[in-house]
Length: 166
Image (tube, rainbow, N blue to C red; front, side, top):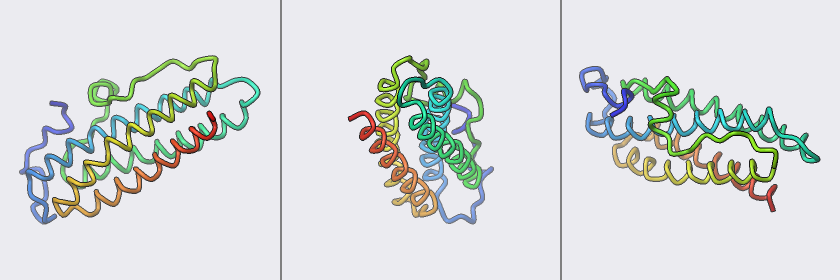
């Protein structure tokens, strides 16, 4: 298992009111969320740098808005892990091991970039949905709220990208 999920319960604050087994499950899910988010951040920023063509300006701006949001989100998710007493993944090796989103080289076709990013945002939203339920059932409303907000952001970005590709 990745380092992000190896923290022992003695490293966690017993005053949070969340059972250690629930923190373990939540931390495992958050580790994947951090990895997915950071992987998509890097991919989106690469597309931002390399997009060309008649839609350059609008895509360059859209990709920048999205990678800035993803960078902030990765930080918030990792800090939530730390608040729960779990170590957060912090290396490319860990991100690649945990993430299902695949890195891809920028392509000369902007529409392909848009479609790939839309699919990735949809994928992260699907991954986060059951974790919201896990956090909710554990009484971890802070994590559930954070993840619900992230799902909303991913679904909005996916919609914007799909609309751009239409």
